Image (cartoon, rainbow, N blue to C red; front, side, top):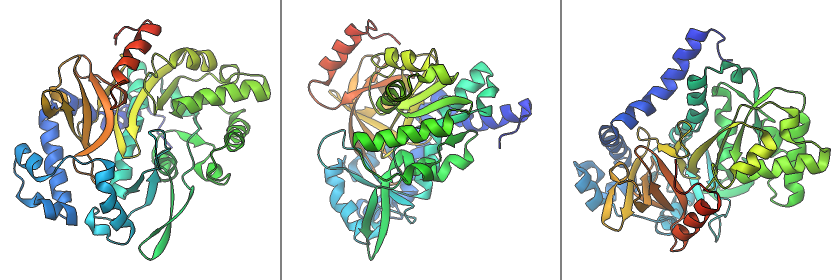
Length: 382
């Protein structure tokens, strides 16, 4: 339970937010520290030893030693980890295995999640905590978070000689870490998991009905999760119960991710369903939580203190913080598990320190982004 003393509350919030702000103020220094930390981790893995992580001294050394890798490149290594060679990529046991939702086409990707990785995902709460610090709306913590996350358990997969559960990263995060966050999530992840891992309309309506029944008499101050799911939930309430979320709850903020255009293309639907709430974008993926919206500027700010960010641009590979406003490139992120991982997202640099993910790294993505900006009358504005 979070303290109700304002001074203690402020100290707690600052302790969680300040490392992010410090890193944004000096990204070069923060990224150098992250790279050193990761090289120590990689040196303890089979893959890192093959690449000579212990001998890497500079950024140029790192780029020569570790090639940029896509999921397809990493898949043979991940398959070997699943076959029992955990130390090939990991320095600690897995807590679970996360799968993608298949929104990028093809089969779902399997990503191992470790205790270190899981703790880093707490950064997803920085958008909400920063909002509270800026507005002094400490009463947000007296309410609950409307939990619309995906199941943390979908099935089982064989890892070595044992079977382990796999599910969606957001559900796994909520299941293991929500007790350490300053606001309670309702329904609990265990209640969501009990409904099964199905993806049909009927499955989602069962989850939505559970969320409504559990929260209808509570003070819901926050909704977090996937933006399209939040929209579908609002429409379900109108169809099933004749009310919109804004008719039941006085929410303060929505922290949402998973798709581009949350503050532009999705904004009319979200405010129509939930009222005039603050919208804060979370930029993350199954592989990690990489940034979040810091203020009213409609773009996210990287977690320079947690991940190592590079980007492939037309002029070559550079650090993310070195991008010029208006420049685009394909994000390459290093995590505690995946070194120089090309995630497949196209990043647009705005005025520092702001960025947007405008979609998948495909030839037509900039055209789609430009069209959406025109249709929403945003025209590239923060």
